[in-house]
Every structure is written in C-alpha cells, then in structure tokens.
Image (cartoon, one colour):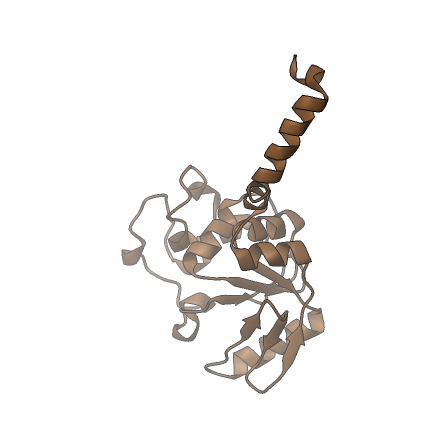
Length: 200
C-alpha cells in the first residue's frame, strides 16, 4: 500500500469504534477500501462484495503477514482499535518510511513490529514486490534485518527495550509485573524506614 497518509479512519472506519470488545476487527481492516458496500458493526463480511481493485483482495497478497505502507502511516485520530484490526487480520510486521507517533506506540503495545526504513529503500521494495510474483521478505528481529529473495539484506534500527518486549511477548505492564518481587521488597523496606508515609 504505497499511498502516503493512510489514517486510522481508513485503517478501521469510525462505525466500528462502537464495540468495547477487543475482537472481531480483522474483517473490517481497510473496510472502505476492501468492500463495495457500506460496512457496519456485526455484519457478515463473508457475503459482502469485494473491491477487485484493492490490493489486499488480490490472491497474491491475501495471506500476507508483512504490510509495506506509504509515509505517515497511521496518522489521524488516536485509536487503539486500528492496530487491533491489523493484528487480527494477520499482519505481524509493518514497514514504512514513517509512522504517526501514537499509532507506532500502539503497535508496539499490541505486539506488532513497525519498522522505519529510508524512503529510497521503500521505493525499491515497492518496485520489487510489484514486479515479482511470490516475492517474500523475512524479518529477523533478534538480528534486526530484513532479507529479500535476491540476497538483498536490510538492517533496521530498534529500541532495545521495545525489542525485548516483542521477543518476550510482553508490554509495559508485563514488564512492570516482572519486577513485582523487587517492588514488594522496596515497599516493605520503605514502610519500615519511613512509617509516617503510610499513616503510622
């Protein structure tokens, strides 16, 4: 999806924001692009007419787990539902020359890997994937590399803490909970050394 400035309303349109559940959004990812009719929450999408011109409806891309996107992907309103829909559709990695900051943070918090590459590198990837049927990328998070079919290897930058969280399958809350013993020890010692803080 090489177009720039795809916002969160395009990723998951506003009519699907009524649900407070964290499931069922994958079928509505890019709803306005994927289908020829208007979608609504709870409808059976298996019977809806698909837009044959939309790239994710093409057979060669239906099972994709890596999304190549244009610049400023995920701009617009802050809605965590957007990365939920992306993850539930089946994507695990997003690659673009830039992401909206809040959207990128939400991706990390929901187990998605957003990778930022130079615009020139993205142009080459878009060109190669469009001209080669069966084009596949392999993303190696521990090594921070992307391998292409012709032996082309791309290195990407990644914050060490976010990398560790993705590899361990945890978020910031999980990271904090992993320190619960140390937190408990500190609180007990603090209660003894500064009892007046605790109303004693």
